[in-house]
Length: 479
Image (tube, rainbow, N blue to C red):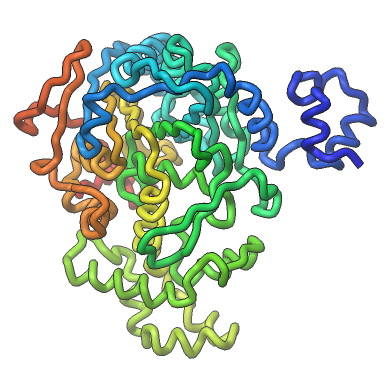
């Protein structure tokens, strides 16, 4: 039987000749697993393509003022001038978004001198509802902005570029307009949202050990993420999230982790069961006492007065039923555990996400982190039930450290990054600063680096979080 890599090397997939294949040939390659379970281009196919492109590639370099200030944050004001259409989207901004992507890339990168390798863009392409089937939706980081960046990098010799996303299927990205923007530019997209972790081959994954984690020992990534010769550019959007509060560059990196490992917001009492259902070797990759570690951290943060901590009361209900001692006893009996867990709700989900999200960002450390905030989203990450609106914010936030970048991004959204849960814990863990008075912030204007002397110079665009959803669609929470 033909194997997937043999089919790729035969040229049919690589040469895009699938339409010319017979029914019998299609059946043969499906049996071989030549198509990934997410649809679209799979990891192995992408590795074959970028492997051929290494020789002529010139890796980009970040301009020295940014490279030499790893904890600084750089702001670039954009100048998109558009009005929302009847659907609420800024469709007429498409050519401007591409032009701004090219201009921003000129401000951030210079021509490199090292040949080989590849550049990988990690966008924020999550699930998108039908009413957001528009390539300018604030749910996504703009594919047209990224297309402009790709064009500029190609102009300076960085020809071996790949993009990719993990959590969702190709059909969702196609509906959201990604391929509309990228197909005419020949921008390749890895669709790594496989149905099961077992669908990844060993050669498609890189593993990295965590540092000082409460939860897990090592994290898998779909390649070329984690390859030594990959230049990783992390491009997030500007919006809020039920679990992360603000979903910026730290959270965007969650999409680099395959299914089974990548659902960071699993409830405290669900993680192990979920991993087992996904066929994950839990004892190999996770700490056996992660629950005690996470609970201790949760209680520390409750004592520290985290705003709206345990807002749904799940931990209080857990305590009322006897807490850890009662849970540990019930855990040995499925029926007793079911009764104990009844009506408690998602236990310590926010603490779970914070710790795993920060672990992941600490391990990956992209070459550059960018918040594409030209079009932001108010209300809720997915704009479900049409709660919230796209807003023209016209700002790019960039830097080497995702932690400081997200602190500044959260401030621009109207929040206090000293109170946002994950930026606060990032500082607690020594990963990055969340106090704007202690972060060096600069504007890049027409190539010039201009220091921000007073935070009032930074224009803010209130993008609040709706937790109540249909009960109170107008609710907007700020930290």
